[in-house]
Length: 606
Image (cartoon, rainbow, N blue to C red; front, side):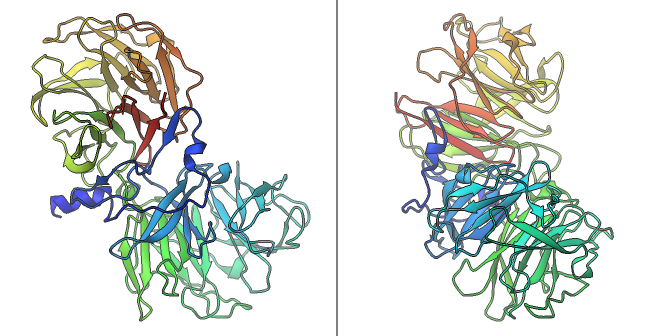
């Protein structure tokens, strides 16, 4: 593949920025405190110069899509669940130049409903708006009735878990995504739950208007199916959709499975009132099956307005090497006039997307007076033996940033690369301290703009642990850069620079610095967040989000204490960096995610 094209694929497809009135509450209101999340704060483009509509959406690795008209404007919007407990809403807003649908960010926590590991929207009570079922940890099912309207939803939770007509709890394994649909055209919603044995439970709602809806078991072997996967074993974790894909008036079954690389189609050869599914499935589309790493989650709707169903398929990643689908995992297929299917893209949402577990930095990499964005990933999907570090050059200015992907920097050979930037030898060139999966931190000496040579592969080796994540800053006011290193245990290692500005010598002061422990995988960043002239400490983690430690000391004697008022909503496994991108005297934050993207937060005015 041409390198320029390959880099364009990494960060998304062609897109143009768009606007329009919001039909949902401002997502900024969902982030408390003085930090506002922005998905498209300034122009960002791929290596070919194509604009990314949603650059700081944060990436997706295991997207569970749903399509429905959530704002009542007549076209279908997109719900994506990437993390447990929350749904992200993307509102349909016209088309991109090449005919692909464009989406605008609505919110990353739809109605602030905790939906566990899966959710399903369906009008189960027949009042014309969308109600909600979702997994309720662990493996229960909870119901939310929409007490508002289709254009202004108001969800009220039914107090109890979902039960059958005899009062027994209905369980759905949290990795088996249930389906709710009127299967037999009798006006009552059916519930289908895939089982690990390869069969499907079939329930039907008893009284849709009841305060707590109950379902009656119809059969524990729906259509007598016993699903065998591509690996010759019964199914594992599964997803499904029932939809009339061939316009013959009945519902066909689509099945995604952990042990199946394709999407299985069980065609309905009966009718809507008398469904009869073929026992032997075919991979979909039949003429050119789409094969992935497995566990494929389908959602159907007419997105292109041709009155034919289109398919959006999320790849959750099954037994066929999920690393290869950490980028190519949200597929879009449309129908042709002859009834065939065309694969349009495997990245429906154009954003910064680099695989998984990103480590961002804001740094003037090319020394031209403005801040660039540098992002490292865990494992390079295209080069499985290494992590890579990508440079997004600021082609705008210090006051009007505009980022363009310039490609991978010349660092490789280790996993979980984590760079920290600074001039360690006083030659005016930018050096790199590079953490990685192991216990070592390497020193790469700057040779000029965007050029480095490894000077020491183990400048520092931490006393215990792995996943070294360094950050540099002058903590004692002596004019040289000191070193903090995060690691797998969640503690911090402090190495004081007892050398000079031209010859660094890092000496361990403490491997449990200030008693700080943020859980698993600490990722520190030193930055003056409050503008008082000293360095504060912002630490990301695997399981506790972001924690801010304010410097209550001074520039010459740092002393850190937790700021309990700091609130920035982020997902799991995050790594922060900060800097003043737009020259307004206030810092911005960039945060790497487990999903391989970057989040952006802007400070409110003081």
